Amino acid sequence: MRKLTFFLAAVFLVLFAEKALCRGTTLAIGPASLNSLCYIDIRIQGAEPRSIRMGRFLSVDPVVAITQAVLSPQRWNRYAYVSNNPLKNVDPDGRAQVTFGDKRTEIFFKRLEARHAQVRATLGRYRGAGTPDLHIQRGSAGLDIDGKTKAKGEFKGKYDPRYDVDKIVSSGAKQDDSALLPATGKFLSGSVLLRATLTIDDSVTPGSKHEQSVALHELGHAEGAAANTDRYLALGANDVIMVDGQLTAHDDRPLEKEAEAYKDIIEPPHP
Image (cartoon, rainbow, N blue to C red; front, side, top):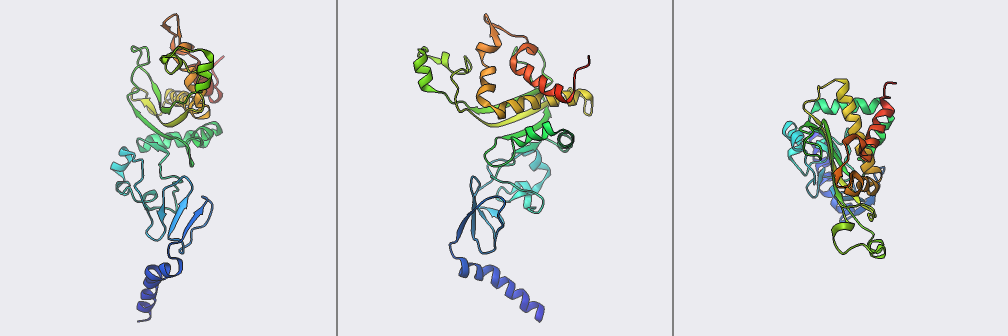
């Protein structure tokens, strides 16, 4: 009887006392703050509203990694917070941020991250509120932009390119698309990387030294795109990668040189 009394008292506290004591309370907190039972609706800046008592987002999670959701039924519920495991996981803004196509790929990249501060710093650019999302997978990396060469890896970003209109006007640029991407990136200002996908081609042998080399090279692209999006887009524009109408060889393009230099810090080339 005593246990039943305590149980009923606990139910009353959760269902009624919270409303009686804290009706309509909303508190803006930072990620490091402690949540209280009293707060009905916690709103973290830049994040989705979440009900503490219900343990659910008040709107759906805007990103779903399909390949992971198939293997984890908790991900099917887009109102659930961090797969119903808040003691282990955090999700600052309702987005998964760095996701992986399969468990082996996740283990491989997390080992790289554990061994190399440089990799940790790069992936850190895709974690936390206000950062772009990055999905890492194995699959088809497609062809190089020359349309002929099979790629071993690919970094593909979704961007919001922004321009300094006053600079375009003052430069006397033509009233056409020649002042915009992909023609040129010299008028970019404040562009944003929204999300990206890093792919290692299926032809690359898992667990090989080649796989690590490809991964580090593509992480070099991920670093450049997130660190300075304007610069990254500008270095990939046509007026940089083409000479007299001819596409520069892959290894001679500025972005490829920088990605290779990133790799060489961890894997110094043989003398």
